[in-house]
Amino acid sequence: MDFVQALPVSQLLRPQHTETLIYPGRYSDFHMARGYVEHLGVPQPDVNLDINLDEWDRSFSNLLSRLERTLIERQPDLVIVRGGSAPALGGALAATRLQLPLAHIDGGRRAYRKRGPEEVNWLVADRLADYVFCSSQAAQQRLVAEGVCDGVVVSGDVLLDAAQRYLSLARLHSTVLERIGLPSGVYLLAMIGRADSVDNPVRLRGLISAFNAIREPIVLPCTPHLRQALGHLGMTLTPHILPIESVGYLDRLQLISESRAVITDLDELQREAYFLSIPCITVRDSTESPETVEVGWNRLVGTQPHQIIETVRDFQPPANHPPVFGDGHAAERIVKALNDNPIVFGHNYGRTPLSILSLPVAA
View (cartoon, one colour):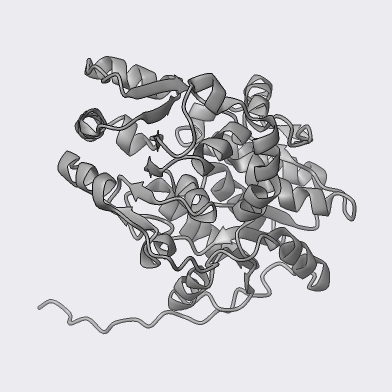
């Protein structure tokens, strides 16, 4: 998904500036990932850091040192990071340590769950960035509440840019419904990918128990990691569940847009379901996109089977569908802001401090 979300901004930057696209993984990983974004015109990365994708968190010092070496060699006028991944945090830290101006796209996203690694990454990147671009007004308000006020721009969501741009291409090129033999609107799309779901046997067993009990077709794209975890559980999938291989971006858009509802633990899928006006049932206790819950199109249900089953059966979103993530022109606003307001390192560092509660001193 990082390719998809980087592409709208990259395509506008390249004709006007010299852009260096850094890919943190290995060349073999990139060529495998490239199949995910077939037909989208993703450029070759200018730099591959050649780090195993599974080692980003375990070998963060290696990631940081390679990013710093790359930035020293390239000497960019600006570093842009997106989201809350380990490479985004590494880029933010490397740029700040080298006193390079930093912009953070998709800032202000919070689940208010400090145990999640993405939460900490987002917090640090937002605090270090000289400019923060938010996908929604609510994200901006969360930053203001944290004292991050200056240099914050509500741009809209670059993931919405991509969905609007490529949905027609998905409908033209994707044959996924023909391949799986299901018509539009009669199936649920279930996508589970977070480590705290896949690697937790209790949570994963609860999810599969719920899926087995839901008596309507469920399409379940499976990564190798998920297939391995399911194998270790030893649970049998009932015939109405269709486990398929991981799909590319265009097939993903097609599957979402033609589903009756989406069941997921993935933040990006919650937002894509909202963009495409598809009801979403999120099998978590919190979300980085609470806007979708507040407007009634996303329901948080945890992993208890009975809650999942009841929500799938009864959940009906409201008729109102406000444009909380913008109008599909986030990349244009981001590039315009960067062109019109050259970023200087540290110029927004003097932000509004948070209030400090006066606590009694223990005797």
